[in-house]
Length: 119
Image 1 (cartoon, rainbow, N blue to C red):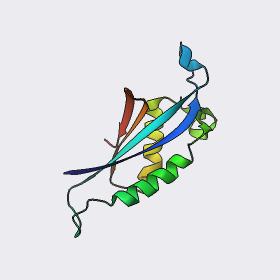
Image 2: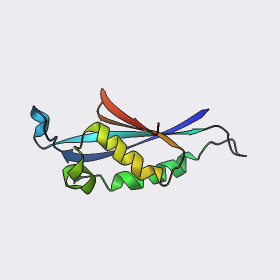
Image 3: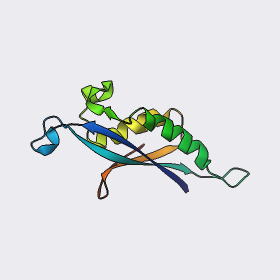
């Protein structure tokens, strides 16, 4: 199995609901996002999927999150904007255009991340 990964980033604000601590207050992050696609076979050029294609799709989706208040987006009005739910939100939005998407990982800091996988 081949795993192909690209990364992107966006900046946004959020506040966690039903959380006892500082993160219940409005604050921001410079989020790093990594997506992974798994392929069993390579194409005639020896590629699982073109990095350029993955980056184009990812950056377009992340641009819609950049410099937003996540809590105001409809998905996050129903789901707390935790790293876990942000990973799922991005996965669900990318999976439509990248059917072989396997995993989305988001970092809210250099040492804290959460991931969502298709299985």
